[in-house]
Image 1 (cartoon, rainbow over the protein chains, first blue to last red):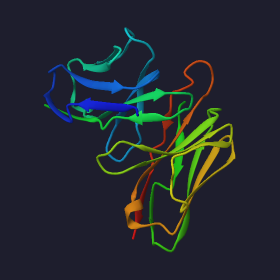
Image 2: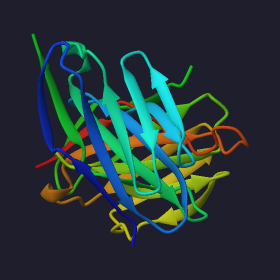
Image 3: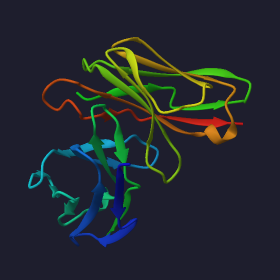
Length: 110
Length: 115
C-alpha cells in the first residue's frame, strides 16, 4: 500500500527565516509527486509536480526537489502570506488516484 | 484559467433530506473527481470519472451518488446522510492530455453540515 508521510506536522517561522518541508514516500511505481497549498476552508491550490528523481521546480520563494524516497519543499525568506497547509501527494499505478500526506501547517510570523 | 466552480459554498441538511452538490469546469478536462476532507485531515478520494464514465469508486456508501451528465459537469447527490458525513467536499478536474495530464485542479469546496 502506498504511504506518504510529511514532516513536521506544524512549523512556525519568523519572516525571512528559510526552512524545508519534507515528504517521504513508499510506493510502487511513482508516476508523479505533487505539492499543493491549502488555505483554511479553501480547496488545495496546485504548486508543483515532479516526475523523476533529480528534478527541481521553482516558483517565487518556493522550490521543490525530488529523490527516489522523498521530496522537499524549500521556502526561502518566507512572508506571512506563505502561511498555509502544504500537502504532498503521490500518483501511482494506472489510474488517476492521488494519495495525500497529512500535510505541514506552516505559520510565518512578523 | 484553471477554475473549478462548486456550488453551493455551504449546505446544511437534515438526515432525511435529499440535496445535490454541483461542480463545473470549462477547461476541457476529461477527468473529474470528488473528495471528502475532514478538519485537519488530507482529502480522501471518493469517486473518479474519466471521459464521463465512473472509473474509481472508493467503496463509498450508497447514500452518496455521483453523476456526470457531460464533460463539464459533475454532481454528487446526497440522501439520508449521517452527522459524521459533515465535511468539506472538494471537486477536482484534470486534463488527461499528454502534457500535465495528471495535475488535478481543485474547486473551493462545499462545506456540508448534517444535523
